[in-house]
Every structure is written in structure tokens, then in C-alpha cells.
Image 1 (cartoon, rainbow, N blue to C red):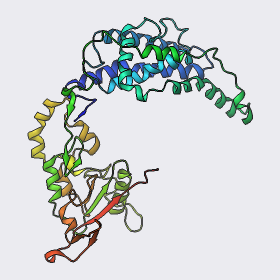
Image 2 (image 1 turned 120 degrees about the horizontal axis):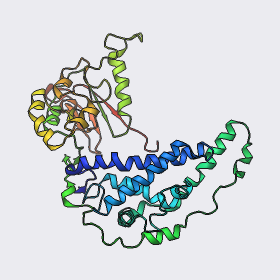
Image 3 (image 1 turned 120 degrees about the vertical axis):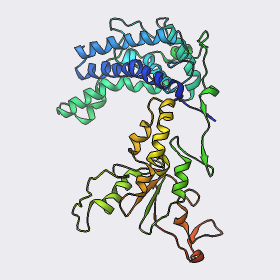
Image 4 (image 1 turned 180 degrees about the vertical axis):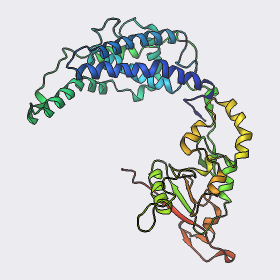
Length: 383
């Protein structure tokens, strides 16, 4: 079992706090810094508005985190990872690199003062979880932002030679004391609202098929239909690993199979997205078996999560497995499933596994031979 950073029972709270507090804080910090330097260190109306928003959001987050251990409640979630990563950089970089100390409403450092006790204790708490991935020294790159913008401006205006780039003076008198920040953050948080960092209530069992972990969308009933698929000779099975170019290869195959004729002219099916795999891959194991099953299960699905089928339909379209079966020939089935135990059985009729574990085409078994064609996509891991 592994903890999930998106517990279903607080999914709405995660999105609400992210939308109302965390994302606006991050955007305001970026605007306050980047626009300030782009405008030659002038406090424009946009910069002033962003600065005000930063400290308003910090105040609201401080109030929230004095009452609860984590942003969405009593469980560590993805929004905590995002917020903590931002706030770790606030004292070490943003506050001085973006000249926020001079702003009206600034109450100074979070960790080196008592201006935000809720956030201070929260960061000490979160540091216990994220310490291996926090590198305060790397946050120094924010102090080079003004230099990068100024160098780019002068290079494009032909006012500076390449060997003069390193001579642009720094505008900072003193860098933040990282030793003091580390000393502060290493202290025990103490007095934090109770909660769970990896509570059993926020864990979910990872489903496996034939020992292979499968994603959240996996449906066993549709998978079995895919396994038992009555393949045709001209069917194409595209099997690829994750992030290996599945979408690209799917679009290439669609162009070859349906969109262009042998002379390169478009066909009547060009840009027709009324059937699966046209805008991208449509995984068989993610679909409902039929529209009847979809209608019967939709009410229960909506009761479990307000987003319903949205995460699936946004990736694979509003198709069901029957749509895959009835797509125009030659049919294309795109999937991250692989091997003899996960792909359609008829694909391997007549294939023989050799002693060294490789597979070779052997004599047809009882007069049968494999149906369809298999395309395997792999990617150089160094890429």
C-alpha cells in the first residue's frame, strides 16, 4: 500500500485551496519578481498589485494553518507539496531576490521571525517529510534573475559584448543567511494541529494484473473483452510503454490508415474524430464495455466523485469499448498493455516460446495462426 496525495474524500478541498490560495500566491510571487526586473526595477501597478496579493495570501494561509495541520485538513496532500516547495524558497530567495522586504505589508521572514507562526510551524513540520529533496543553496538562482534579464536586454540591443556578460554588477548587498534558516527549520514544529502524514485512511491498494501494476482507470471487465477479442487479419495492436511517444505513433498510424491515400491526398475520413484513436490514443482497458453499462454505473460514479467520468473522458474521449470494436477497418487498438498475458490471445496463436525466453513464430497450432499485426514502441531511456 502507498499513500495517495489525492484522497477522494478531500478532493474538492484540495482543488478549492489550490485555486483560492496556493496558485494565486505562486503567480503573484512570479509577477512581483519578473515584472519588477523587466521594468528596470520600477514598481508598476502590476508589480504593486502582485506584492499586495503575496502578503494577503500569506496571511490567509497562516490563519488556516494555525487551525489545521495540512492545507486540505488532517491529511498530507499534493497541495502541501506545492505550497511547502514555494515557501521554502520564500525566506531563502524570494524575499530578498525580488525586493519584497521594501513592500508595504511585508512582515519579514517566515522562519526567522514570529510574523507568521502558523506558517512557521507548518514549514518545520513539512521539512520533516521533504528534507531529502530540499536544497536551499540551489535557490540562489533567483538572485541571478535580474542579471539574466539585463544581459538579454543588452545583448539584443547590441550594447554588450559576449566577454562582458560576467561584468554586470550585482544589485544585492547581502544574501540571506542560509545557516540561520536551516537552524530554524530543523527545530521541532511542536503544537501543530493533529493530522496524518500517510494515514491508512488515505492509502489505496495498487491493483495488479498478472503481477503488473495498472492505472486507476483500469477496468477488468473491459480488459477481459480485449483479451478475448476476435482479431481480424488487418487489425493493428499498438503496444508501448508510458511516455514513449504513444500519441505520436497513434497519429502517424491514423494518417497512414485513414487520412491519406497512396498518393498523399486527403480522404473523406480526414480529420474525422467520430471514432476512437483519432485525437490521441483510446486505451481499451479504460473504457466502459458498452453504453448500457455506462448508463447503469454513472449514478454510482457521480456519487463517489463530483468529477465523475471527467478524468477518463478528458483523456480518451466519450467512447466505450463497443466503439473500438465497430471502428472503421483496419482497426487500431492502442494500449500500454504488453506481452502474451495482457494483449489479445489471438494475436499469439501459433507463437512458440523458446528456452531462452524469446518468442518465435512456430508451426500453426491445430491449423491456427496469429491474427492481426503488432507494433511495439520503445524509447531510448537516455532521451
